[in-house]
Every structure is written in structure tokens, then in C-alpha cells.
Image (cartoon, rainbow, N blue to C red):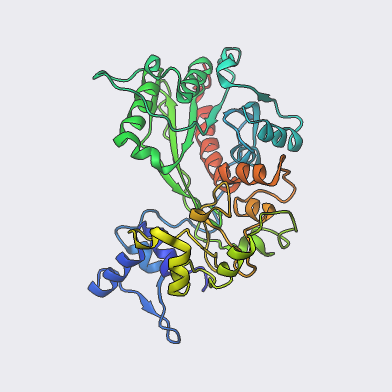
Length: 412
């Protein structure tokens, strides 16, 4: 298929609906699929989707202008992990003043790849950010999602003490940058029936920031060959009246083949590297799963033996015994590609993705070193923000800061 045509799976991702919903829409005439003349598969054109009222984004023109920084911009990043977010911001032109991370292996990863970065290996609770007050252009961080207790009052900063979000907010209060970018998992939207996110927004409001409506960005629309979602929370200092524009999705959707083979994303095939292996009994089972398939594609007796009691429970459990397909984006990578609930098997070879394949699906460059054991490397990569997604977010921040610079509002 060319760039103007989308498969049933791709269209379901674009519209944030299930394939079953698309089939109902096809039958009812709400959104008619086109049938392939040979295999009768359903597909949709870009023109169809761009006109459909429930399309969640507008396709971007292929020849977009990439903003150039009007001046040298810097950043502070908290909970930096293996550097996916920081690397994307660096590629966009940012220079980090400070990166904080408590995990020793992730810190070694950061320091090994960027010896000149100021990587602070420490519990965030022990860091005083006030010396950076008025010197930071953007503060970023993927703070862990923790709930707050309620006592019938509006949640404030002091109520969040003991949580890592409190430390994120404290760092903002001590540095007062023009803009802050928080990233988290989709589950934060509904965590504690939405009260956790509401409490976080209240806290940022209390310390002098207006929070835009949080936006769920799907990585597949930002040059990432993976069906990963990240919730992006943008907070702008209240004295600044400049709008912020979230990145516009790119028209090209990339697949596992784009990640692992030479092409637009990478000039060469994925390099050989270490990785997990299946035990013999599991390899025999996974050998039976076709590309794009999962446990329901196994013979019925094997399904029952492999799934045990779960066989009789509801839910699709589509991550179990899952083999990826060359022609589709990967499912969201986790911290362990061989874990039963979230298996990520290579499309052809019966094995989990290797470390370097994992890194490519997260759009890390091949020369980005990961420290620690194989399991530690998987963990760092699985927890990372995809580099290309981070780059697109950083471009939006540059546009905002350029406008800020032009209007002369500057930093306090």
C-alpha cells in the first residue's frame, strides 16, 4: 500500500476505534471501506479519512517547515531515564542544564552517551533547583503517576507531599520556566476517576501556571513505528499570553519493517545484538503463531493448554503469544519482550526482539549505548519516550519560545 492508503488496522488506530466498529460503519454506510480486488481486504484512502468528521487530526503537508531556534534554548529534565526525551530535545536544538535520574543504570547510559551533559544521579528530593531560577527555558519530566488523598478540599501543593509529582511541581516553582512539559501514560486520564490529574492541574495552577487541556499523542503519527501513546501535559506561566500548538501528525505511518530494515528511518538493517530467548517449550508454541497473530491463532488444544484458566475469561488478551507483522507498527514495547501478557515476537524468527531492535522501534540511534544487563537495557528502552516523538514535541516548544522571544516577554 502507498502512503495514500490505510489498512483496516491503521484506520482503527487513526480514528481511535476498534476494527469491529469500522466493520459496523462499513455495513451501515457511515464509513465505507474499499475492497481490494484480489484478496477482498478492506482499506481506506487518505481523502476518505480527511473528510471524515471523527478524524482526530488533520494530515500535515509533507513539506512542512521545521522551526529554527531564534536563540540558544536550554532545558531541565526530571526522571530522565535512558534519555529518549532528552535526545529528542537535543536533536531539536536544546541544551540541557541538568538531567536528574535515580536509577544507576540509566544514569550510566546518559553519561556514557553524553559525557558533557550535567547528569545528576540522585533522589530528586535532595536536589535544590532554586539556583536555576530564571535561567530555564523549558522543564520536562515523566513523573510517576501517584494518587493523592482527598479531604473535601481543593488539592494544593502541600497536600501532594511525599509524591514524586510534588517534587516535579517543586522544581517548577523553584525555577519558574516559561513552559513545562509533563508526560505520562494514558491511564493518568482515568486514574482515581480523574481526580489525580485534576489534583495535579490544581497544583500547577496554584504555583502560577495555566495548564492546557492534556493531549494524548499516538506515537505512530510522529515517525515512530509503534502503537504507543503518551499523555502530554503543557503548563505555561500565567504572565505569558502566547499560545502553544501541539505537533501536527505526519502523513507517513511507519512499520516494523521500517524500524528493522534499511529505509527512510534507518540507512541500514538493525545491527546484531543480545536479547532474550524463549525456552524450548515456548518456542514450539510461538512457532505456530503467524505474523500479526496471537494465541487465538493456535490450535484449540494448544490455546487451552497455554492459556489455562484465562482461556475461559473475557477480553481479547491480544498481547499474549503475539508475533509482530512486518507491515504494521509494533505494539507498545514494555520492559520485557518475553513476558506472557505482553509478548513481542519477531515477525519471522521465533524469538523476542533484540535490544537493538527494541531501541529502533523506540527510534533511538544505533550508536546509543544502554548500560547494565540485557534485562536492564530492555527496561530502560521500554520506559523511554520515543526519540522521534520527543523531537516533534520539542519543535512545538521551540515555536512557542521563538514567539516568546520575538514579543520580548522573555524569562523573568
